[in-house]
Each structure stands twice: as structure tokens, then as C-alpha cells.
Amino acid sequence: MPTPDPFAAKRAEMRDEFFAKLFLLGGWLGGTDTYKRTMWAAVPDVALQQSAYTLTFRKGLPEVGTANRLVMAGHEALLAQWFHRPLARGDIELSRAWYATRSATKAFPSEVWDAVLAQPGGALTLPLDVWGFPGGQTFLAGVPCLTFEGPGGLISYLEPAMCRYFAPVIQATKARLMKEATPRDAEFGLRSAPVEVCNLILLLARFVGGAGVEAAPQLTSNDTAEFVWPELFRSIGTIGHEMMCAAQSFDKSLAAAEYEMMDRFVSKMGTASLLCDLVDAETVGLENALRVIKGHPETDRVGVRVDSGDIAAQCVLYFNEMKKLGIPPRVIVFEDEVTPDGVRRVYDLFRQQTGLEPTMLFPGAGGYWWKLVHRDTVSAAFKRTATEDRPNVKFSNSPGKETIPGYVRVYERGDTLIVADRSESIDGAPLFVKLVDQGRVVYAEDFREQAARAERTWGRYTRWEASPLLADHLKRFRAMRAAEVTAARARLSAGEAH
Image: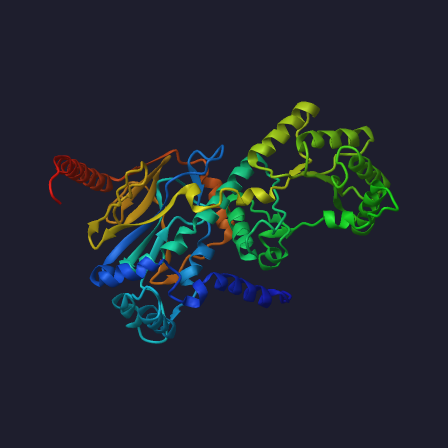
């Protein structure tokens, strides 16, 4: 009989607490833009009509190797913002009282929320369905990745929360780019994340985008992540500058103080990535690291870490100096704002200078994961695409910002993604899955399955197209727009009264 896991109950409690933290301030209806209240209070009949909205990333990441591709991630965290648990009847009523009478903008779409309150009981779900790509699915910028269906006034409330998909999608895509550059990336720190909750979202997205088919646990220094998801993450720790500084005084040389801390750590722990740049990585640190490694023949688990200066040259320097002393190759961790391009540069120089493959080099890319992580990077857009049986389009004077109308579904056919209406029969494999069914999250795919999908689909698609029906909708809308704009320009030029 299996031994009960003594950590299981606490782990389950922490997972639930993590996703509950993302639930919008306990279900208070203020988790949206103010204009949602004013807009749907003005046209309550329109607000209650069945509608569709899509989330689309209009641009790919401006990084080498993306080819306009993005990787879906973040359903578990992002859907929790509105759907982690039902809304409370009392909270909705209290929101009505505040926004209708006390708020500086006194408006509340009562008809919209009365439709929700018509349900029996105190725990109320939003009558909304969400479809979209499953986790790990590669897609192309410009292709809608999620569609939200139900009363339009309710879907509209979700916009600010669901636009935040940009963060895990960007991070999962970055993880895929890093995996293309090296199979040995690590995320070392918490400090670049605004809060720890964000770091956990990042780590889950990184696992989906970068773990691959084997989906081995990824390295992290976030101790919470390893406890809550031990199957996904493995902790890694070594020496920090704070310990290295602790032996310094005016009574001893800087070199002696540095060596003391290096030696004490290895003597106690038996493994380390020796931090060599406290004084100078290419002289004092080099001498001390080699002395410590030679002084501990009982362990081969002591390597070095370089994270300032010319890190590519330093990797070669440390490797060659260890080789001269007859020390077998040790792990050399290199940091300093490492990116996939940076990794390739370090690897290329190492190959050129040594004639060997850089199997002992290990990049740590802590700061990279948060670079460019904002909505404008991918131009996330949440737009209405249908009302009842009528397709809707949001036009724009900027290229690439026109929405695709309809109740959207996406299919694959060879290397092509096909965007179609749900009413169409398409010769292709359907890619959208149901994520939320009448306000309840139904997507519960394992993170390893998602990581394997990212591996399978990353190089699959090169183009996308609209289905015949949606292409016809767009053609007709564009013709209407062109004719009306031309007529309006003629009137304005003629100085006609408005």
C-alpha cells in the first residue's frame, strides 16, 4: 500500500490559494473598466444579446526565430480571474448599491446583472462559454486565440483580465526560443517579478513553452514553485554575493576573504557554482576558484559562475585554465542578461576557441523572461465579432487592426491555420477546445501534455487564412466601408452641413 504523502494536503491548499489570489478581488464587479458600466447601462437591450468576442495578438515577438509564432499558455491562471469560483449574490447587490449611488461615475447595468441574479441560490455563475487553443498550441499572430460567447455585456466585463494573456503567451514563446538556443536554460531568481504570484505564472508558462516532450522538471530558485509543483520544478541553489562579502575586513586581503567563503561553502555543501566576480573574475576570482576546485578532489560537483564583464571570453578562459590543471570539464554557469541570441554568441565563441561543443556551459537567464512582457509587444486586442446572427467588425486606420467577424473557430490543414465561423464545415482538424462551459472552467489538461504539444506544433504553421464565409464577410464590410468613407470625404470637401 503506498505511503501517504505528508505534503499533499498543504500542496493542494496552496494551489487553490494561488489561483484564488488571481480571482478579481473576491468577485467584486469592479474588476473591469469603468466604461463597461456606462456603456451597457445606456443600451441594456444590446448588452443582453448573444454575442462573440475574440482575443487576438496582432503582432509576434520582435525576437530572432519567432517567425510570427506564439505559444498558448496561462489558462489555469488567467481564467481564474473571473471563473475560479462562482460570484456571490450579495457581492453583486453590494456592487449595484455602490456604483449606482456612490461612485463618481454613477451607472450600473442593472439589466445585465439581473439576468445573472435570476439564477437560484447564492453562488452564481456567468452564463458564458470560452473556446480557444489548448495550452502549448503554437499559433500565428493575427489569428484569434480565444473566443468568448454569451450575453455581450457580461463578456465585455472580462476584457481587462483576459487581455493579460499577453504575459504567459509571451513567456511561453520566450521559453520555446530559449529551448531552440539551448536545452540547459535556468530561471534563477524571484526579484525581477513584481510579486511572487507573477513569478509562479511565469514558471508555469515557461514549462509549457520550453519543457518539451520529455518534460523533465525545470530548474528554479523559487522554493514555493518546487513545493507546489514538484513534478514540474526542481530547486537549484548556490553561493550569493552576500555570503562572499561576509568575510571581508581591512585585516585581510580581498582574495583571502573570497577564498575563505568559497572553501567553507564547498566543504559544507559538496557542490557549488563558485561566484568569481566579487573582486575580479579574470584574475583573483579565477585563482581562487581553481584553488578551491583542486583542494576538493573528493567532489566533482564544483563549477564556476560568471555574470559580469565579457562572459563569453570568461567561459573560454575558465575552461582552458581548468584543462591546463588536468581538471575534467566542470559546469560553467554564465549570466548577465542572457538572451537566446546571447547564448548562441557564447556557444559560438566557445566552439571557435576550443574546437569543442559547449556541453559544460549552462546559461542562467533570469532577467530575460520579463523583457518586452507588456500588452503592446503583441498588441493584444479583445474585440466584439458578432451580435446575435450578425457579424461585427472593428475597422481601423492602422494596418493589421481590423477584426475577423463571426463566432470564430480555428482549424489546421497542413501548414495552414484556417479561421472559420462555428457554423461552417471545414476540411481540417479543429484546434479550439472548450475552456469554460457556462461559467465553469472545464479545461484541466496536465502541464506535461501542454509542454509536449508545444514541442509538436512549434514548427508546423507558416500561414493562415480566413474561411470562405469569413472572407466574404470581410470583403462585404470592406466594400461598405470604402464606399461610405469616399462619400463622406466628398461631402466634407463640398462643405455640406452635417
